Image (cartoon, rainbow, N blue to C red; front, side):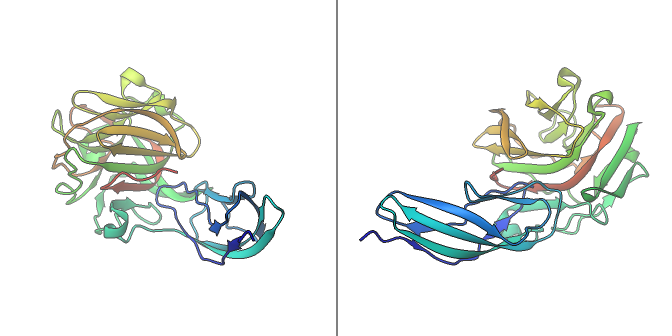
Length: 295
């Protein structure tokens, strides 16, 4: 007799980088089986369920947890079948478990510019504001060709995020309708001059692209920066840097720079450029001390 089993379970979906996908079904059989999925109830806004594959996805437009009930029918090649109801819990991880998640820094930009991991506060000028929009609250950056004092700086962050030549990841949601119009748009900098560190910015050599700028070389995205809200994830794993756009691999190249810089983390400033710019909207900035999965 062909044994086919499916059991109830609760599945946690960790939305750590703005995009998730996970198959909630566990089953065993001695024959080839084809699961058929259906969804009962309503998912939170921004979360969808693909009945053809049994996977959930998240587009970043809603940041609340929710539950759903999925009914699964599993049929064998001989026609036998079994049906199970699976209660699914969709939960957001807000970055409070440094050990488990490898999360070094998280600024959600929901009520202020502070980091929620270690409580780092930021010094900001009037060019940076928390505003509300269709995706909730976010950081509005309108810094155009100013000096260092106008940038956003997280105090006491200099000794942190020193990854050497090891793995790390940076994830953020960004909307930049005028990306190519502003020289040296600086999303994130922990770097000084030619010293080892990381810098994410627009540079003239590839004006439409997102760039990880290094001392010896830079790694660019293949896709142009968008005027819509999108999720960019940068991952360095085993000396290879990959750019992911909305959970899909966009570009990759080797980048082995030793990250030992002790400068404070900033938005809108890099000291090798005599003026600074940050003209975009930003949400859910996360920095990990490991290579994360982007999908």
